Amino acid sequence: MRALVINCSAPHYNLGARKLTDWLRAQGHDVTYGDGDPGLFAYGHDLVCLSVIFSWHAPLARAIALRVRRQADVWCGGPGMFALTHWWKRETGLDCQRGLDGRFERQRGRYRMTFASRGCPVNCSFRANALKALPQHHLEQVLGIQSTGEALAGHALLAGLLP
Image (cartoon, rainbow, N blue to C red; front, side):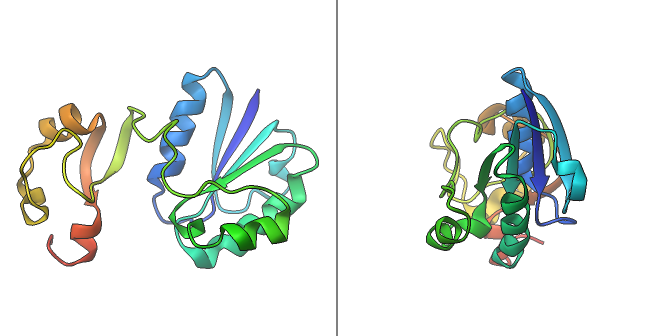
């Protein structure tokens, strides 16, 4: 199956879109990744996946979905779509993933960013303001990712607890 994963919030790094890309490849799909509107290059795929980080990028996802929904299955999700599932259904007639997608949330890979919001999934005792001191190997072992160490994102970062 030919799949296209689109980061509708480009140029921002999209961890979910990257994990989905890796997961689809692990499932045996031929996957193309793209940032922003692919235009005519959206055609010719069996599956088009739209990832939206910020809600103001939802209209772009809508436009792409309406363009390809008759030729391909369309998946849409991401934090920008969390509060827009009813709008999405009304506008496109399609369902939208709300919240984390358990199929690929723990997908291993080499990612530029790690998202940590509520602490360690195996009950470590670190606090949000201690994340900046979290060793790289701990991220890889505990969170199941291989980060390049360029960025650590999460609610702690957004709250100003990390530099």
